[in-house]
Image (cartoon, rainbow, N blue to C red; front, side, top):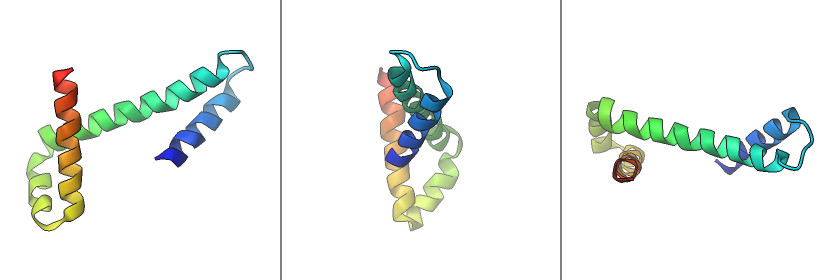
Length: 80
């Protein structure tokens, strides 16, 4: 995940003109994009794909961790 954020930062920074705010904008955009992607993924896992995730969680430790993290993220967003 850190590698993707670093690559996003470098890509955005290279595409923007050189101003005092360039680094701040280049750091903010990839972080926001990752945040929205995590929100969407957790919402899909908990609300739309719950049956497939529940079946997979019976057999896969990775699926259980994904389901638990999706529940935490979705609950945090709902409470905010």
